[in-house]
Length: 255
Image (cartoon, rainbow, N blue to C red; front, side, top):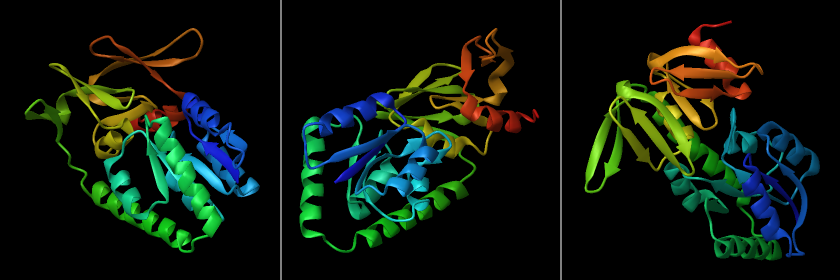
């Protein structure tokens, strides 16, 4: 089975590649860390199987699926997305939640082998229903543009963090660290999901691992190497990546 790995995390790509190495039934024909390139190569090489990450900068795994000319078997890979996981249980062929164990990965491979041995029909319909489900979920979430508090569970309590007090949010593995005026909170939620809830307010994603609140930016600082950092009111410097710079400047009103 011709196989492609599409994941923006190089270490995650290497791990899947290593786990596939000794299985002669899978022919790895490409690994891609850029979403747009992955979509183009899948259309060009037409693999049987794709291990597809959900979150790429400026594009999602679902955008890639919608941009393909056909449907290979997708094994969706996600750090954590409660909405997607609920949908995968119903509509997806299979999915892996990072960090997954080797045993879980090999179980997925067995499932793929079984599928190809009996050529079960109806897979394209499952993919279509998955995308339809997620689009409806996304529309419902986008309609709620007035999020003012984020719930964070602490022990037997749930703290409601006012978004107006959030200075910035940093990714920490499979969690998000939320820095407020008073303290830091840790939330098991990806910053990709958080920015969808915050982007209609004074927040912007400036890096794959950081979100900032414009209300707490003190200044923008260029380094000697042309890199751009945001200096926050607490004097913390947060790097602006090239992939998010244009959107960030646009939201700031800088041409």
